[in-house]
Length: 201
Image (cartoon, rainbow, N blue to C red; front, side, top):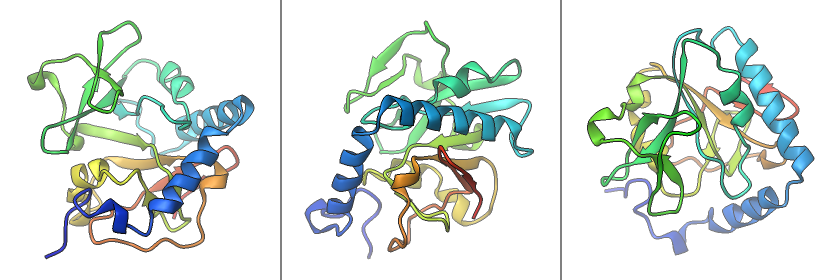
C-alpha cells in the first residue's frame, strides 16, 4: 500500500535535494523580483474571466521567499473574502477569513493563521479560488510542494471531478522544471502565475 503525502521517508525522497536547491534560490530572490511577481500575479488573476466577482479567495502567509500576495489581497474589493489556511490535526487544511488587524496565532511551523474557533473555519470546497505556494512547477500543471502533503490531502476530491476551487500556483519563473515525477496523490494545478507569464496547462 502506498504511503500518503507527507508519510513517506523524506530521506528517501528523490525530490529532497531539488526542494533544497529551489528553496535556496527562492530565498535569494531580490525585492524587485518579489514585487514584480506579486504585481503580475495580482493583475493576471483579477483580469481573468475565471476569477469570480464574489466568493472566498484563499491565499497564504508568504514565508521562506514565497511570492507575496499582499497586492492581490488589497485589490480584491467588495464581494471577495480573503482567507488563510489553517493546518488541522489530521494534516488537512481548513480556511479562515482574515483582514489586516485581525488576530493571528502561529501554527507548529511558525506560520501565522487566523485566530478563529474551529467552527468558524471553512472547508476547501467552500473556496472559489485558492492561490497556492510552491517550490517548483511544470508547464503541465505539476506542483512540487514542501513535502508535507497539506494541499494534496485537502484537495484530493479534485481527482474525482474538476470541481471548484480554481487552483492557481504562485511562482517565480526560475521555479519552472522541465519534468517532475508524479505521485498518485499529487493534485495538479489549473494555472501558474509568475512574474513573466500566466500559464494554463
